[in-house]
Length: 474
Image 1 (cartoon, rainbow, N blue to C red):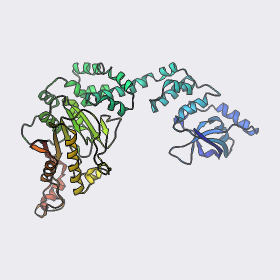
Image 2 (image 1 turned 180 degrees about the vertical axis):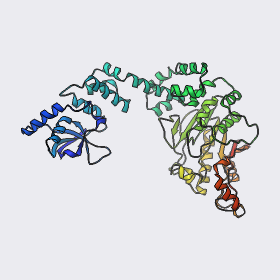
Image 3 (image 1 turned 120 degrees about the vertical axis):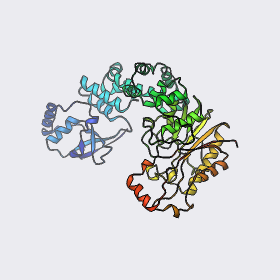
Image 4 (image 1 turned 120 degrees about the horizontal axis):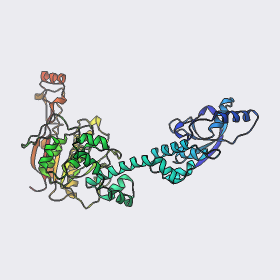
């Protein structure tokens, strides 16, 4: 912790209630200090820290009553110690300074402890107690309910990741906890669903139970459907089973996955799982986006390793952060070193050019046609090198044609990426298709005005989408 002492304007100092440990200013003390100032009494410098979001202002750490007295007597500049706390909690630092002349009241101590823990749950009771002048056991009592809520949140994350078959060492690293701590939490996993299952057995709906317990619906579905076969799971989820090689839905099932650019229907993922995997198989989703695949795997009783370039540890701990970067010296790398290899890959990449503006700037959607196909070629080879010989892949993509404002008769092949192009790249990488399933996007994404304009110009729009299922043998 570093500091410097200098004179600063009184008007540049603010009392930030977010880091002030007391309930208010004692105006009687301010009056006494003001009288001392008029009599020429010299006070010790007050302590401040730079405001993180306001570079010309300082937050009070110690000396709120002296500062108030200076203001009331018209003093323009004061001696101040400017602190750089180097990551130390400013609230607890201010609390430790405040208990010097006068202990915090019981309400002030409890409020400060709770505020500090709410902002940083890694703080322990001893550190908080030292700052506010209270015993560790007293602090434990202050924050017991907050700790329980935080602990439950951690348990639910562990339960979710463990249920998806993510190895323990990766769970511990992802959540930033020690392996020994993880093992302690895992020992409670068997009892964690008890209250949730009890409510399900009483006839409460999955949505009601999820809301009551703070679980996601897919997690509750994973309990409600446990032990059922795929046919019964589909029936409970309300998904009709499409027996033929055309799967069509007007909308995504919003119970699964987040609102996300290029979101795909959970019903489609469910059909892929039902047709091309078995319960407890390991599914790999290398570009997981809004999490439709891991959510659907929970409901369908499959394990799932999911990765994405966008990191969301609080809401999506099961989607591990990883960027498939071809620009590195080593080229594309595999994200994990693990013995487990997937039984099925579900690969739904950002489509070429479509919604490129909605994705991250590093997304492959914004690549040139040549670079997009080169990425896929390298990626398919990497997959083949890191999976079992029996592993299948479901590659989801669509024709891309530059049909905008152009009559169908005027369109040319140049610049497009069609189904044939994908099949050519896949075959060169050693993947051979067994099924091509039509899974068209809903035409409802075109509004009536757009459709009318397309009809007038004889423009042929694109709603095609394919699920290409492949193996590694001819």
